[in-house]
Length: 584
Image: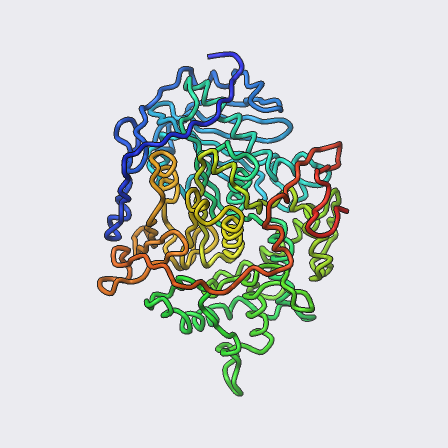
């Protein structure tokens, strides 16, 4: 097949047949509930799509004419069949979208079931690796019948952010262009390789991949039919400046760090003792940490007490500040009211050092942004965290680049109008990105679009005890991609998701998670480690957390700019963040 690739929109189909969600009745069933998806034997809830064979050899992909897929030149560096290390053989493709947006693809060489999945890239990206780990139990992923792709988002390596200095196009590609252009090019290649476009296109990402997911829904509502956004770094600039700087500086005095990681188990045990039974089950997990009102002062050292078994007043103050989040000297909140939920303390090693002098992730990521990405067209490699001021004017000065990097616009009416479906999820024990940012975004959607409208195309899941994207004490293995596919393909809204805790290859606990605001409650009999013994309950009232903070206006419509590169300068329209301050 030759000639220019014509980019057709994705087709959203709906079938009226009813989907019965498979529920894991036991730990063993949770592991075995993976069904093949291909041809007439579709997994429960997914459309039965005939398998399609390629119409060209894999090597010929390198010769495709892709002019017209995007506005930029596309070059294919390699295309070769891979037969090992995957469930089924595939054509591995690597290419570049000018100037430096590397993308990779996997095209099944047999049994393609007309679906396309693009995966997100975490951190500051810089490498192109298809990540289907989180979606590994989704049938089309597990059996290798889905075409997939990802991108390095316009730069390679340099995880410290220095890649952005004097490179405005790389900044734009990282913010939003790289993911969009990859979706266009990937579907153009699929159209030529198989002789037809995907019937359905999906995006799945966590952390910055979750931000990329929301950016797609907000800026390019027709790119994907279904989107999974996990632990999204939607408020990226606030998170990677104010939030992570506070993680470090709230724990410092003139002598260095006040609280060290050795005290974290002590704090966590006290939190669990105080709040574990609030949900009716003593299982070490808080199903809604917002209902926990732990007071770090309860751990203050008594006279003569072993210092290893208690907290000094200074240490207790640090614990409170880390939980509550950044404020200025007058107490005005510079981030959401809860920065780190109770129950997540064991993973605070992300920002609480084990010993004085040890650098933490929070310090590294905050310096990356404050030196290279927080200020328009300024690189300051000598910037130190001690230079940062927790004031309202400095807040707005710092977050100006949110106009092109943040994904907090709640107006998803075009995405919903296209027929798109969105599944948001977050771990309640996320030590990196506060679940409050996802909750605030979800509430902003409901405020703008109406609760009923949002319910028709978006669901939110909150996983107790789960840390950032995975890990933590809670069940952290689950499939949220298949429910989105079923919603798109057969019109069945997502319901119960069964999460498993797997330790040393053995499932030790399963727990159902339901669309927010419903929570799982023990039915009163049977093992509390078995998902089958829990039912969905919707609390009569929600904890009165609220989202009154300095940057709350970021979660509103009309805050996104379109940018272009002019030499070494980044130029965005509108030029500044009208919500507070002007662009420097």
